[in-house]
Amino acid sequence: MNFPATRLRRLRRTEAMRSLVRETHLRPGMLICPLFLCPGEGVRREISSMPGVFNLSIDEAVKEAEACAALGIGGLLLFGLPPEKDEQGTGAWADDGIVQTALRTFKQNRRLDSLLQIADVCLCEYTSHGHCGVVARDGDHFHIENDSSVALLAKTAVSLARAGADIVAPSDMMDGRIGAMREALEANGLAETPIMSYASKFASAFYGPFREAADSAPQFGDRRSYQMDGANRREAMREIDLDVAEGADMLLMKPAMPYLDIVRDARERFDLPLGAYQVSGEYSMLHAAFQRGWLEPERAMLESLLGIRRAGADFIVTYFAKDAAKVLG
Ligand code: PBG
Image 1: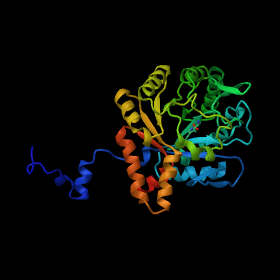
Image 2: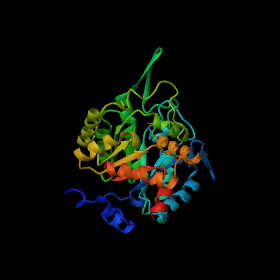
Image 3: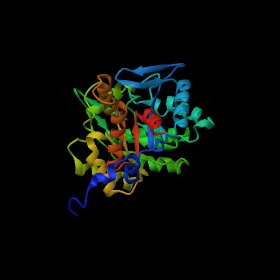
Image 4: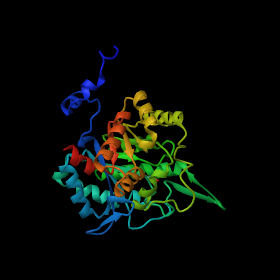
């Protein structure tokens, strides 16, 4: 047992040796690439705080999706920037909504067959106030109504599944949404569509750059009355318990790097497929360091993804999906 009989360095001597005993792996197929769809044609507008990430019109998004498929990436996570926003977020469930239209286009393209089309389900990109649900105002105060929001979210999930989404992924954090969505999908002949629940989603500063990308910053207040308090590890398990009981098929944990303990807790407690979302701020901060030459891009990128896998994630939603897939081959 003791030195010198045990020398752990024996198994680190060469890359062939390290490769044989490596415990955690990354493959392009376990990466999911978010796309931000916008109206227009030929639009490819870079997000200032997210180098390499764009608002894409559907024609441009097709090219991006084909590139992802060719790299062996597992799927896309689709977000939409609608042409118009309103108080209720009607663009979210419009038959000719931006994501619905993209889904119909993608589904006709045989080159995209290997890519799962995952539709984010939320209202914040579609509401004029930028909240994830219905706002009730009372003088100077406001609150986000739960049950009326759930009804709209269920309608949105049905609309996206009908347009061809392979998976719907609710990210709103209203209570009871998974049960309502499961019931609405069943009632509409969409029993086969899985729900990937953003089961424990924390109110996080790391969503900052996303809100530029998706044009979804709340116009007043913040999301702390519906997204979770970052201090609460046990409550995260209660959130997941509920979603599992309500019929979630897979779980998505978010953010990833500042919450790796929660990913590990979920892995040990639940047998459902588990993903983690390396969110916009995680990507932006790494890129900020790359730009200054403070970190080696390729190694830091892969190490960040490996850490998320090691914590227990089966798959990872990441803005690095294409770059990582290129390296992993
Ligand atoms: C929508 C949603 C958000 C993200 C994913 N879905 C923003 C938010 O909750 O404010 C964040 C993703 C990221 O930061 O990359 N509710």
